[in-house]
Length: 240
Image 1 (cartoon, rainbow, N blue to C red):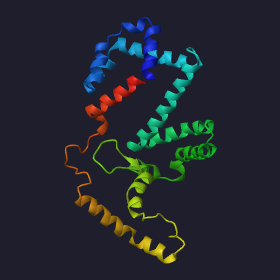
Image 2: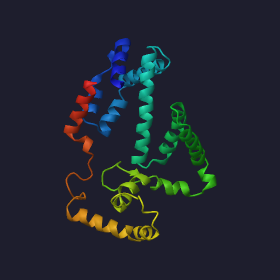
Image 3: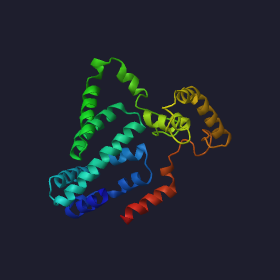
Image 4: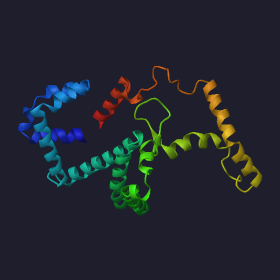
């Protein structure tokens, strides 16, 4: 959607075609701090970006019609969801707070009043956390909303999600919990042996080589940054 919008922008803006695309293409091909600084210092490129931002705002007001306005809202909402995921993956508490507050009205618009209600409460809670719970903000910033189990940068997972995917998943017995909680002895036995069963399960995975070795060549790398994955994503985007 962003590519289509930029193509429309280039067709409508005469001055936009005057900027030097070489600096931008260098940044796209090999991203580095030096090439980013070169792009930011390119005045023609910055002028083009300013024009594009103004063009995007005009599309939000309906310059290109209601269809374009709708799809741009989809882009904005998708970006909000992506930024929420990014805040969790990087344990960015401030961004997590900002995204949760903005998503309250989105849930209300799509018939999720309970999510909207509690997100509003969460927004107020985070806003006043320094007054109501001194010191809690610093603890949350150190790893309170997400944790990591690998060496890959920016690959944290939410705490509750990690719990479900590790010891909670390992501790579940065959057949689920049906009948377990109605039998007091079975429930006690399940609670008392959970941690031991988890240790046995993890040791078995380690013996079978199913736990990622931190010294392996692929450790610390995002799979989606491999050339084959990039090519696959590009083909999917172009087909759309």
